[in-house]
Image 1: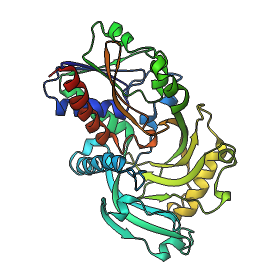
Image 2 (image 1 turned 60 degrees about the vertical axis):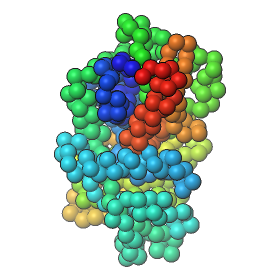
Image 3 (image 1 turned 180 degrees about the vertical axis):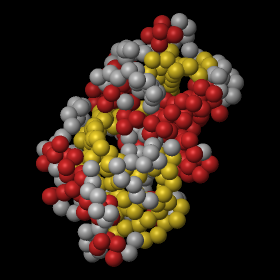
Image 4 (image 1 turned 90 degrees about the vertical axis):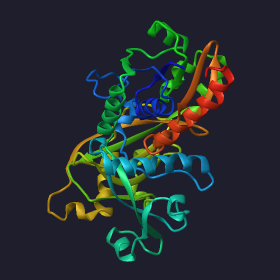
Length: 378
């Protein structure tokens, strides 16, 4: 296994490439192919599909108490992010506490209940009241986590990959329509293809009849919208369950399965990300002014200290992007398409950063147990 092609240069593609070089030092060449590449000034009409650059992003696991597999992916990544945040300044990872608030009727997140994360403590009733939340209905916890500044972290990953001398990152101006087309594009057949295309998996898989169900019914976007404000905080604040319908934008209410929440992530560039919404199966790049106003109105209530200096909150800019979702969760699987060997790693939704290293470890395990042993390419 000397030559590998990775399709997709978001956090999943770059992280997978880096982990494979660590796990398989005999790899001679990795070529990363993508329509969107960090630090590439050429914008396209698919920019809102390149979700990694537009993510929040913090580490807060969404895994249910029953989903032990996803918990492990998230925990592996959490531990490595915390180490990077402490040891590698240029990673763009900022360690800080998250103040998390949710209804008492909701289950306590697994990582708080098991204290899988660092420095877990309960938040007082007086702070709940300060944030306009009823202590009879809400509870809050504080724990140590991190905020990732995506464009800095992705640039860090790209630099680490290019330093190895084994990685080429090549822009493709069109989406690939088959895995065989990658061989034509490169001029040689890679030993293995890693599919980290996110929502782009629809395009490349639509060629194959065996993937009709996957393309038609499983791959779907979760549209998000966030604001960037020129403020800073020494901690994150997250309100999972909004107190009333008045906190939800009318636009969100019109979309089946959509929901709105409130969070603020101070990043290492001095700005704060404020969000957000999740709109299933909405593929457009329409930016709702009403949603942005609702997001800011909510954060003013839940984080009143933002205006205690007398300077009102000003939105620097706001934008939308599509989380690469999949019914049934992320797809991690080895599969053959004719003479093309492929390992899939797509469909993680909004957990792309917080699960990235755990998912890449799983890709390496699949290669070892499924691809290398079955094909005897040792």
